[in-house]
Image 1 (spheres, one colour):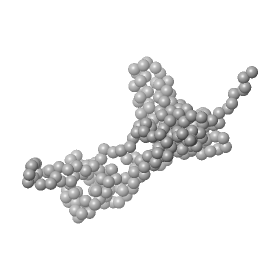
Image 2 (cartoon, rainbow, N blue to C red; image 1 turned 45 degrees about the vertical axis):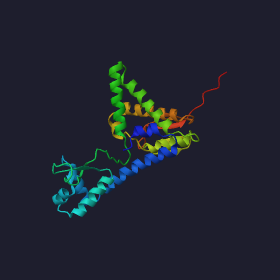
Image 3 (cartoon, rainbow, N blue to C red; image 1 turned 120 degrees about the horizontal axis):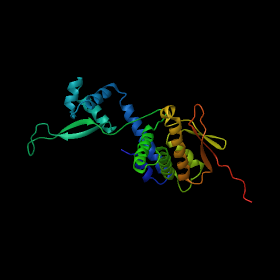
Image 4 (spheres, one colour; image 1 turned 135 degrees about the vertical axis):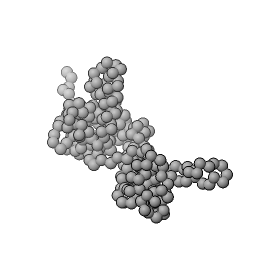
Length: 253
């Protein structure tokens, strides 16, 4: 299964990055869609609630299905990454004459998640836990450590999204879209129509919005010469962070 860490550290161009993220999302959507078929869904729950792997014969008998039907749906669930396939000899015999191992199914350890609108509470949780652990070791304020961690992670995302021929606003929009912020241009500004940390913001707005601001600061720094800066601008129906054109300071005399 592709992980966010793999995507961050292994890609060098926007094209390859976007292809990998799209592939991961499509795989999750396909896996969830596979459970829409009632028989397949019943077979998944049957296997998921068994501590031991389940054979085709056992699944067919438990649900009153033809063995061929059970095998078809079990194999489809395995193909979608919802079940793992293992082979075991149930007779306890081994060596010549013991027969072929049985094909068995068990719930996959892969995590499949689809959220509409897109949410990334796992990212927020990971940053918060890392900040708490580092703060305990260093004696620093957890908020200070969280701010630094969020900025560092944002820089990694920005560097991964940057390409040799696009390190401006186009790269920013692509990176924001890939991570669920739903960016929209508004003149020289960029509005974010979705907050990936929405539920957490409702309960802890100061901490989570501050983390989000530093994350997007880091993303802009990681991409490079974007001409944009991030600032807090809470508004109903939008993410708390807004990207605006950098203001040029007064000329030095």
